[in-house]
Length: 237
Ligand SMILES: Nc1ncnc2c1ncn2[C@@H]1O[C@H](COP(=O)(O)OP(=O)(O)O)[C@@H](O)[C@H]1O
Ligand SMILES: [Mg+2]
Image 1 (cartoon, rainbow, N blue to C red):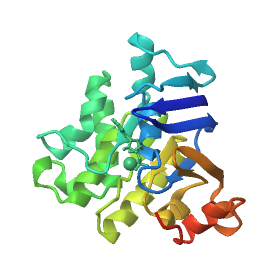
Image 2 (spheres, helix red, strand yellow):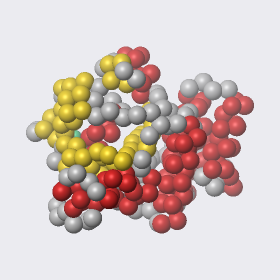
Image 3 (cartoon, rainbow, N blue to C red):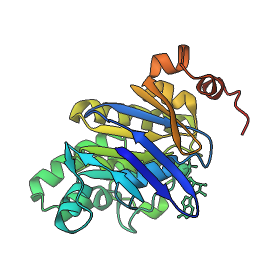
Image 4 (cartoon, helix red, strand yellow):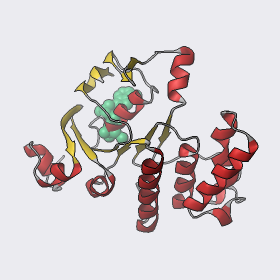
């Protein structure tokens, strides 16, 4: 991203430069209203930047048409509260694969393997509406990664979940990212979660990247004083 700006009534995000590397897990942290979700929405092209340039694999992102759709189909976005389809767990996970024209055999292999990974093989034929919050979010992530997107965007995916499910989901994310070299960009309200799963941490405040660096460095000796206050839980906002 180069000089990417997003203006609603006023400027809510300005990214001077951001380079994300394939296969890396990024943790995006920052106070409420900092612009974290806006950043994800721009990367996913759900919303256009007001100005500036975004390149994917070195190529400028097409603003519309098939080019845009192709890029979007290489990314998956999971929100805090995901709406599953009113269908079975199995069909929810298979959905994106069917839409992308995978053959029946391949769909079966992938869905069964994902069900195993999320510990829900027994619940394959359950209706999604009857799942607990944690189970639903596990299905949402399985559905998102089923087609092996290049980029997985997560917006506070474990907010309001119990510790057991949080741990399971964090393990899933790390394993899936490592196995398939998926680039993960995860917004989290919880700095410790970023510490647990991210290779690189991006600290955003008031629409700007204050600091970005290896997780270890951000937590032990950040360059910026406000980064230190934020990761130590001392920033008042
Ligand atoms: N669709 C919108 N219209 C107007 N303002 C918005 C819209 N979406 C987000 N904002 C504003 O942009 C700022 C950043 O929001 P957001 O990216 O959701 O922050 P975060 O995810 O870090 O909490 C906030 O001040 C928010 O009110
Ligand atoms: Mg947000």
